[in-house]
Length: 226
Length: 371
Image 1: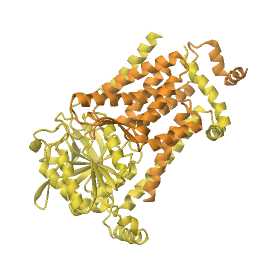
Image 2: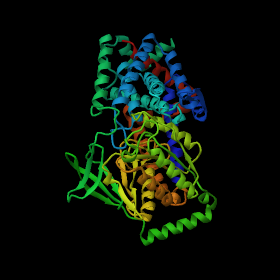
Image 3: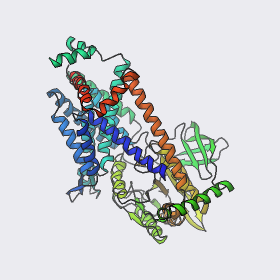
Image 4: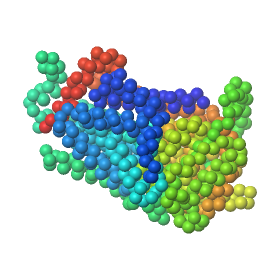
């Protein structure tokens, strides 16, 4: 069983490693990132019941910590513009995810991609198009999937489905976390690779000062120190 | 600026809806199915799925077929590989030696009776001839098959954890919801975990007899988008081998679906189709009974550990290879070559280096936000 056990351990480590790399982009220091990961892993075992009928529960590691982080990132956003971009992104993602959930047929014999990857791709594409920002990708992927859970709570109540909503119930491996992490990675690879392949950031429509700063990153640093 | 936003939104919607153009509604069945046939006309399998060139199917004789041409509702397949059956003298000798070796050295572990966890991602799935319809919200006939499986396993001395949690509606989020159930079950450390479904193809595809009694055949499903694909695939082959050794042809094959069906959570999570919606539920229940008796040696962790283990090593190798290749490519494209490689890694440990590196990064992001 060593192979299988090692496989599981390495998969978890790679996932957590990627998560750490992603947290680095979200206003967190390395130590802060590791703390968040520890909170997600430990919190995976804690479910907080919220409602009875329809049954709703909230997992600490799979929902509370990642959603808290998304809100923290949103609050710490650099400018009002970034906040508006985020809100626009969240609304757009929520709408698109809802439509895709109802339209995209996924089963053993249907569909072209696992939905878990699809939510991340949708969030990453929207984040890239709206703001080219990795932080935005994290916020809208996490809150977009959360929104789908809230839709399920309503649907479950209205249609008497008797289907519980365990928000973040899969802990650190829940779609809320996985979609957030993947969305940031996709945006990073998509954005940086496209930029690198076109030979640097586009200069069109940018101020002279910014173009100069982008061309000479050292100059930017020098100016900062003054 | 507003025009840009509007354009962005439209682009997103067009892109996403073009990806989901073939989608229609929440209804699962539309009565159509495709048939995989060889050039000689031999039917390999029927499925309700739109088959594409390159799709594969492993049948009960361990023959792996691949689709090379599609003509209407027929998909032509060719034999790609005939898997070696583990029935030869040397493989038997090897298995026995391994079993003796394992029992002697790790007696406590291999004799431990693991439990089986059972759940249903599609809790509405039903059997039309007996349930009256193919889908019953909240309490599909599939639960009766799950219950039968549970009781039969228990009669064979296997402890069972059975979840009847509903994951409806039957939409694209169903697997995200059942992922949570699977994870809750995994916390109780079962030996294996089974997601029990039923298929949606003509009844003949699954009609079978064991000891003169009508049963449904079984089909195992392995997700191709799962990073642990090799481990899960070998686990599926192991189940098929053990069950078909007792009842030849009972497991009709392994279907390689697009998706991962939560099989990334553990290499021992198997999705099994117990018949199809046009079979009688009693046949599926009898199938559950025979499957429980035949598969108890796998679920107790004694049989085939070596096989799943081999798949584990292969998956591990490919994951690490992909990781190295991915990271390498990313660094080469984005960080301007190997000389910056060391910088990339020192940033992860030294707080000082990190703060220096983060500064331009933050700047860049904020700059991009401004017009």
